[in-house]
Length: 266
Image (tube, rainbow, N blue to C red; front, side):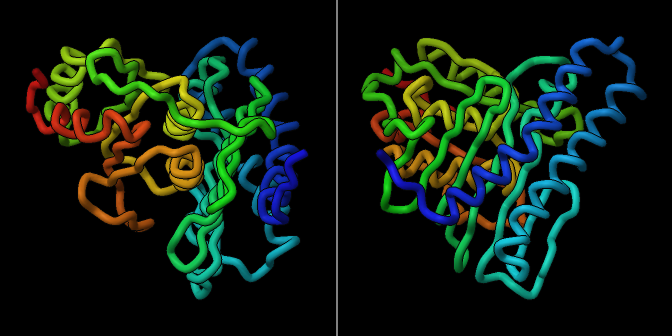
């Protein structure tokens, strides 16, 4: 039987506690008449409630750790050595519309490097987890990236752009070029789960522009520990900036990068 580290156990415990109210909220959203004010406010309160529970549980064990969250921003700014990176609901639009494709995502960063992470889809009851040097797991079963070697046979996943994006045309052009040279491309609406699905072999690769650090922190370590490659389009990860990410099973990495750069593959 696999033994989790204290950090992984702590994150999973926090996720489980927060997921109880999140599942209740999701059930109520499914029965609501969709309106901008109602569901919009409801999701906002669900985000805040989930985040509050996660922060409380993590701070019980490590009150002085820094925290980066989607809603509250940075907590304990003076501690940059040890930090939790939290996204209480990754896939908010899916949650809002009653689509069970969203997750709680928590990464633990030490000295600027993500050391462990958990991505939990409470509706599907899937817990993806990893710690540096110890492999990646789905519900305690070891996972690996796919073995797909041919880009033309690859099944990929992507996301964006958001309505306010200033590079929509660039993103659409990339999508067209990539989709013309691979088996197919999906859009699921949750960056965290997209990375987790590459890690367990459901997809062969993932790319997306203009992501926040909390979207991908946990996914970075999970995918790497599953044998994949994570590339930030030539940049190092930086929690203060939006990021462009390319994450694959490693076999198709360079070919996919070429496609994103508008080079057709023979």
